[in-house]
Image 1 (tube, one colour):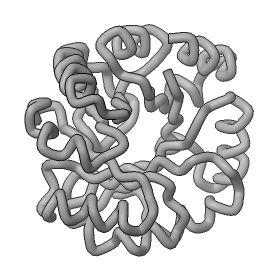
Image 2 (tube, helix red, strand yellow):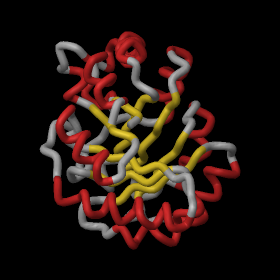
Image 3 (cartoon, one colour):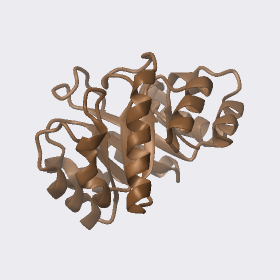
Image 4 (cartoon, one colour):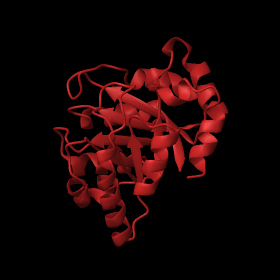
Length: 214
């Protein structure tokens, strides 16, 4: 299982140092949560912050757009240095057109499902994406508890991806730690977004190494 630490809980006054911490943990990528204050009841950052962080690391930038209208800012996120751009199925934009725009720009594309959205809603888009993210908390804030009842959704997605013979990853995000990562891996997920559990860990590298074995 790969690890994509969320820097939502990091100290943004020391962003470069926090990215070095992620690198030293042995993580595979870094998860950047972009919130618009409309789609979710919180604000985070946008393309200028991502552009400022980009020269600080060679880590893969896994950019999660929790936005009502992500399409209009796809060019800005591409220019800022995103490697993967992830949009919510529940957003107000044309999903297929937005995914095509992301891929046409040479970036990986992904879709996210909120807890109330069924796995089947993602099925029409599986050939258009590199990854599906299943939220295991309600999006908008870090530090929430893992929703184990999302695991059947992960399994349903894994079964459909395998049935179609696709190489699409399944990511889980929300309340992920050493224990819940095991549950998610058993359900079929292969990328774990870990936030506060990593940044508060006494031995962050050991945590990442453990998840890598799943």
